[in-house]
Length: 147
Image 1: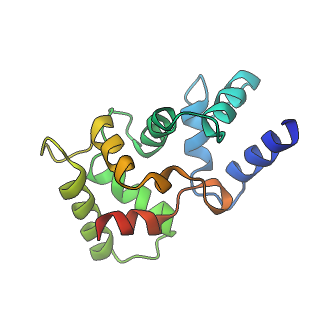
Image 2 (image 1 turned 45 degrees about the horizontal axis):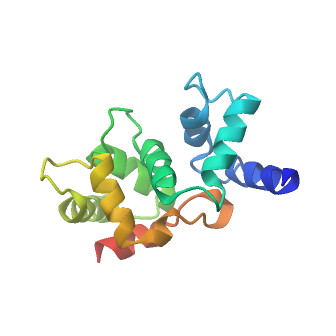
């Protein structure tokens, strides 16, 4: 378990993981990314295979909510998609995908995703919460959700 925990931590904090800083910010008590041992254990618990889907969805939502307003808005989606794709998509492609995600996942039509909206989207594509290479979520899944 300790070795697996360290492998998970190293994959999440790998230099090529575009979410490494954001993950540390979300799981750190100070919100600045300065993780204590307790913060690490909390992170490991959430990201383990045994963690409930709702808990994983909650923290994925927090990671993608860059402005920490408890909603994923268009700018949060754009930032997320640009990080996931490493800026491989054009501005028009990013805009199109973000609009499609909001159109399909925004249950109350307020132009942004609440935690409830996000959880509903996860039910439609549960593999979204599976960790992919280097510990971040695959943008291909985001694109599949929007097709």
